Length: 338
Image (cartoon, rainbow, N blue to C red):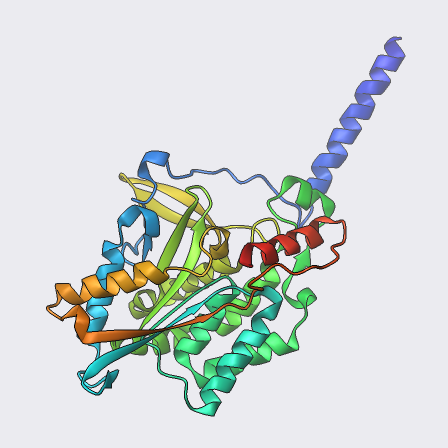
């Protein structure tokens, strides 16, 4: 009986040692120690060193957006967007699309080449739509680079499956390292400098993410961020783009260092489509009119032309789904966007 007990102890010890060894291998997950923002401070935390680049839609009642838009009216030229004596502001709202994103960039590229596409005053995007938003905001050269990316890669080029232990003890099925590298190749100091130039002209570029802790939609002013310049802005820009495209379970969340109440915390962010959808249409228009009033402009003295590009299916469509986690999660992404 004693020998049996010793044998069982040895087996348990060996099993535990093997488990520790496997989970410590390169690529295996480790448990992240969180220091999440307390519920009482949600919406009040600011990004460390960058307190003026974002807002929570449901928490701030949009004073941030109002100021951003008011500044945009001040910065634009007197003749910009002027048609028959009335300001006509074209606004582009871009949703996610996952595998259909190549269609989206092709549409925008073809529209530009056809010649009737306006210079958008405001461009917003979330998920893969955030990449389209950046490309459309900047125009020809950036659109070409993104089109080349979308038409020359497969899923395996941007998504790398984790081993079983990383999945069990980790936070996602796939690693985002390859996708992060693709974003790094696109987002550099030159791209931020180009965005900053357009921002200074009064144009606005907004990208959405989801704060998973708060279950809140967050809007990032990418032009304001780009205007700061420097390496830290490039790193932050890349993180926001990655977070906006990281659908939970499929890809790991992205963490942002923030501060509130004199203390530092971390926020867990993921794909803006989790709770945002085609975002900020009514609020954006409302804030634009309120912002115009703050600078003495008659809200009735301008018009808004709203364009919406949604690369997801707009209505349910039948499709046979394989019985595995990846296929089911992919279907969830499509259903969420429909």
